[in-house]
Image 1 (cartoon, rainbow, N blue to C red):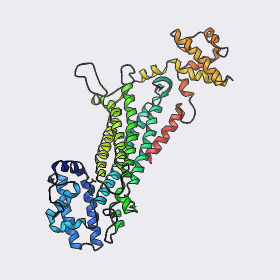
Image 2: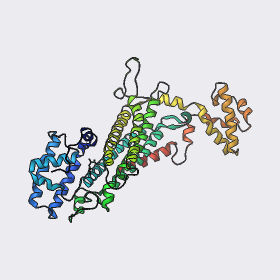
Image 3: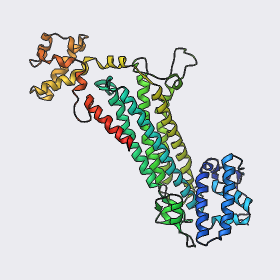
Image 4: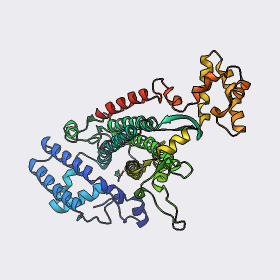
Length: 453
Ligand code: ARG
């Protein structure tokens, strides 16, 4: 019997059905059902024999889902109903006992929580691998200078190692955010029933233990309303994707003919259909282009949950596509970032040439004057005047004569000349976290220790 006299409208079915995308939750759904059936048996809510029939049937369902022979039917609204429908077809009416003391509301929350926990862990592993690659690359290019930029204008030189290690720290923060998201998903919703708890004396802790949750959700209303852990994972994913977009952007810029700092491997670039000379950094561009999509999924789920009355509302079915696409996109971007860096060849000469433009010595010269007692603002003005003079005459600072130096300020006597020598601008950055080699070596040690943990 059904409460309804008429069948569902076709367009409603199409709107309402989630099986096309939530079928990937089958491993989580089956794990949850197994744990639930086991608990029902141990608590005497179903007989041990019934439990064994259910577990046997679930095993067949699992095989079918695994080998792709599981036949979804048009009426299977979601993965939960599909599994139960097939189970009942396989084992008979006792299949209907699986849904004792549970609802799809606590079931779906549990499936999604399990998925988030596993995914946070998998993404974390990918992030760690990328960090390790970056550390190795930093070791290789420990002492290769390139210009550091602000506003994409040459600012101060840094070692490539130092620049790459910046990403390692960014990614480590991503790992922390992923860990946090995993922790937020670590309480079992199952057992909350539709929203109020269930009319049976279940053992939720047993189920939690079986499914490796750290504990149970304390409040059944919260348990079925909560998708915070999805928001947390989407937030972690968004920030990580944003980090990768900055890396991608730098690879795009660095691989341009104008910069020529890096050559990307053929396997990570594409040609043009019309211009035979082109080698386009598409993968790097897509690291840039994909990030807003991941960010948008998080914003969209915030929209779904905004002002949503407790407890479960069908709106919440919309959590899944946002979640899946965001984590799939990030996984792809992480793999691409690794692949691109692995195949990238850095042109140390080009980088060094760009970093040896001695206008880059301006800050060092200003600091030298400060050390000689000139207030920084004043020295900034003196050096700015000198730079203007040099640029106007198309020369570097080091090419100006003693007389030209002295004409700008009496402080600019010939004893300042060593500051125009290239390496000095890097090795002078001795403050903790700076680019001087001893400091970069320190940083490498810390990064290695982080990865060894
Ligand atoms: N497919 C649903 C979802 O993903 C499962 C929960 C349905 N619950 C309900 N009361 N209709 O959210």
